[in-house]
Every structure is written in structure tokens, then in C-alpha cells.
Length: 306
Image 1 (cartoon, one colour):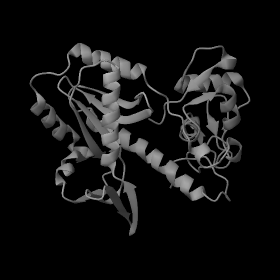
Image 2 (cartoon, rainbow, N blue to C red; image 1 turned 120 degrees about the vertical axis):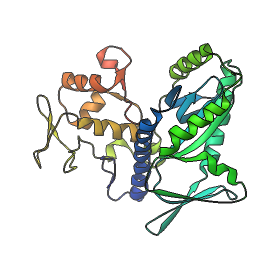
Image 3 (cartoon, rainbow, N blue to C red; image 1 turned 180 degrees about the vertical axis):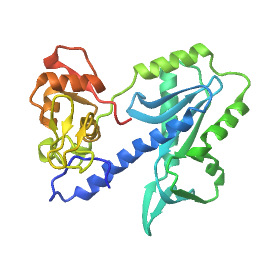
Image 4 (cartoon, rainbow, N blue to C red; image 1 turned 90 degrees about the horizontal axis):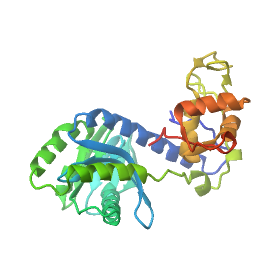
């Protein structure tokens, strides 16, 4: 079952490809929330969903652990099935129920992220600091195999349950002369959060779709039919009678995946089928931040998919 709700044009030639793409994005978010549990056991501080600009382009890091001795970069994957890392040919082969699929080598991704982070650190005037990068497999239904000459990389692929013990040991082994002070860490954390570059989805543009082609509506969490009606303090499904306090969060999440991080009151009313400006404003204020402008010009930021 797909993890998103918005319906695509049934005759669109790339319908299945778009659906698969969005399913992966949703699965990636699920992976990050799974990792959250294990990250609570790690020493030090962490920042999740890092989005910065390196002077050339924006880049994203799932999670960054901060220590005086080093930084630890985590790229989180929610892949299931049999995962074969071909280290010589720089690719990842996944097999699920007899069907194989080739992915880009995730080591290429984390090496680029590391390079971009180093650029940003230098641009921001911080001293140089060692950066370690790891690929975290968040799905428990995954088996790993490796082939190739550089098998040392296998130590940089961790199952999510390994995070607390492996990274605690790593940090203990790095204890010694610190590259940064506590003041550096505090300033770095503040500046990373302040420099956050919002996500703007290119799915609509990339596949030649328009918002008008998509069927919007608040989805029923039980029967998945779009178009729940807003009552005084809840959503009501006209098909199965299900009531929900927060069904509109699924709609906002899909908007974030397809369109981007920002939405206006008017856009939300059209998508959710709400007639009242006040009701829409109340719901958006409960789950989104905004730019504090006059209500007609107010832009809300959705932060449901990290």
C-alpha cells in the first residue's frame, strides 16, 4: 500500500513511476523516524534534517552528530530486501520478492555530502574538523552483502540497532585533542539551524504535471477515500463514517512531497475543501509555522516530511 494519498491522472504515462518515487520519499521519512529512537541513546548533541547551501547548490543531510573531536554524518535508507553493495562498480543492487533494482552507490552520495559540508564549514569561518560518514539501514527487513576490493567500507554501513554501541565506541576512540570548543559547537548548531534552506519539490515540474491535474482532498485514514468533510472539531468520512481530528496532516504531508514546504490559507482551503478562512487558519497554525505577515499574505511552512 502506498504511503501517500493524493491521486494522479489515471492515464498519465508516468503514473506508476511518480507513485514509486513518492513512495520512496515517504519511506525515507519513516526511516528517519525509526532512527530517532536509537539516536536517543547516543552521547552529545545532534541535528536532524540539515539543509544548507554550499555556495553552489543546496544539499541535505539526514542527521548530523556534533562532538568537539569530530562530526558524524548519517545517511538513512529504509531499503528492505536483499541489499548487495558492489563496491568496485559503485552501485547497490536490491532484490525484493525476486525482483531486482539498481540504485546509485550511497557512498557516492555521502562523499558528496561530506565535501559540501566541508565547504560550508570553511565558508562559515569554522576551524577544520574531522567528519565521519555512515549509511544507516533503518528497515529491519533487510539483509546485507558486500563484494569488491575495498571491503573496509562495510564498516560504514550500519543496521539501525547498531547505532548506539558502534557510534559510542567510535566517539570514545576519538577522545583526545579537540578540534572545536563547546562555543564552536553551540555557534555551529545555531548557524546550521538559521541557515536551513527549505525544501522545494520538483516532482510536479519534473514530470510535466500541474496542480490542477491532481485530485486533492482530506483522505480518510480508514478507507483512504479523498474528501472528508470538516465538522466543528473533526473530519468526517461520508463513506465509512470515520471521524478524525488530524486527517488534514496527510494532505499537508503530500503537498510537501509534491509541491514544497510552503502553502497559503487559500491553497489549503481549495485542497482540503474548507470554506472558512478562520477554520483553515486555525488548522494551519496548529501544525505549521508562518512568516507573521498579514493574514492575506501569510505563508505557512510545512515541516511534516524531513
